[in-house]
Length: 173
Image (cartoon, rainbow, N blue to C red):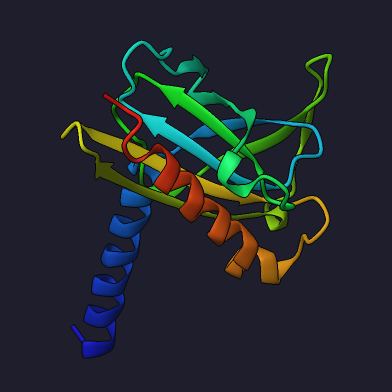
């Protein structure tokens, strides 16, 4: 057998194994339900006692975002932020397969283009209570959509996220 044939067989085997791995790899199957027109940071906090468990729609975890105002940012364009608290402790990770929707007052969902979203940061922190809290954050825009936002996000929203994290870091007992 020639070296070329051996190389082709090995390459094909590696390719098929990789495809098989990707087909079975779990991922972030989340549906974010965001109040219509909101732009800014979305935070989801996991492992919060007395908060509801995440509900499922088929293979997706449904994350209904609520809007709050952060007193520390009052008077700025980024004082309002999106948040969801859940008692669920496991954070999905892996291949991103999220869906983002704006939701109007009647519950109608309008899909948000992926170029109007930025990142999915997943992490955790331990506050004064010594309890580990998981989180994930996403940036959403309706007016700055494009490849630049998709890849880099918006500096103001990074600042907003930092203030939100600082605010909530020691709030969970």
